[in-house]
Image (cartoon, protein in one colour):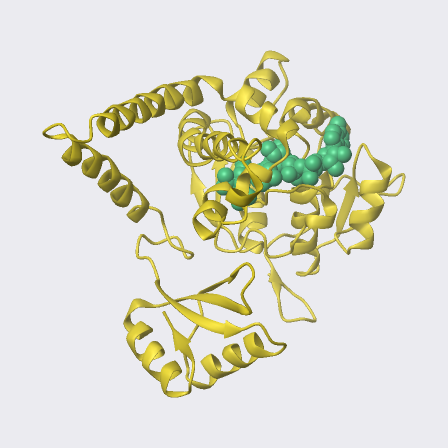
Length: 366
Ligand SMILES: NC(=O)c1ccc[n+]([C@@H]2O[C@H](COP(=O)([O-])OP(=O)(O)OC[C@H]3O[C@@H](n4cnc5c(N)ncnc54)[C@H](O)[C@@H]3O)[C@@H](O)[C@H]2O)c1
Ligand SMILES: O=C(O)C(=O)C[C@]1(C(=O)O)C=C[C@@H](O)C=C1
């Protein structure tokens, strides 16, 4: 391990070169720079590369520098195979990985080209944001998020170790999967949600203004990712269409069953069908891992805060004084009202005490 002045040690030894300095590439750069790793950046857009460098994600490569130890390809999926091939040819001594959201299509393309893939292993951090670009990058993007590595029998121990070191340095949780299993899994947990969220949000376009004004947390929770880049998602969905089509067909059957039950709501058995379908959702959501990757979810307490400067800061200070560790925080503003809601996730065992202590200090909770 290499110790940094800021106390963060790095497992990665040697230089890391990032190709594609957008959200993912610049976030990798920022996280590794914080650990003192020498990161160089490259982008088809010189402005993006310069912007990422200005944010502190790395520096430009100079002519004649020796090969980096590792190349991280973070370009859009449809040019990943080209960028990986370019990296393998330009840097024969480097390990190469990519972070594309689909793993099988780029791998098949690289195999079709007959390249020696001994130094390449595909990977995918399950972390991102609905908006791309270097300007959105964050050093802590990958903290506590799964990072899938799709090794195969040809992957050397050194190749694997270096890619794993990057993921661990960035605070991610490593998982190993075959590309096939990965693509099926992300079809369910990432690609289907994107389509459903986008189509749901699309229903808002023709809606009347007075309906939109009533929008609250439920709509925001279910539509956040609908703001994602359509161009990126056309590529992702196109590259993983078979699992996604299967999932969408099953989803359509559920929607049809639900609609039929609702249409016949007074018929015997219909209310039970509706309840059963809704209860399946409750059971499904209970399976989503919490912030730290375990199935145990946090308890949530909601505190009302006046819409005045300093209120949130006081709440956070008081939580600290009470010794209550905040696992997550979400803020909600009530449109038109001078009040906000701070939804705080805490460990279930401290939730009751947290509410009592906050109330005794004059905070209003829901
Ligand atoms: N956005 C997410 O939430 C997310 C999460 C995990 C993985 N990914 C994957 O990460 C990759 C990058 O996504 P992003 O969100 O960072 O996109 P982005 O648009 O923010 O960044 C991609 C960058 O690649 C550059 N680029 C395009 N073609 C290039 C080429 N041939 N050579 C060099 N640079 C090139 C673009 O100019 C852009 O700056 C994609 O493959 C995506 O599937 C995205
Ligand atoms: O949180 C988000 O904004 C994301 O969409 C991230 C998300 C996901 O579905 O979890 C999206 C696509 C990536 O391949 C990985 C992560």
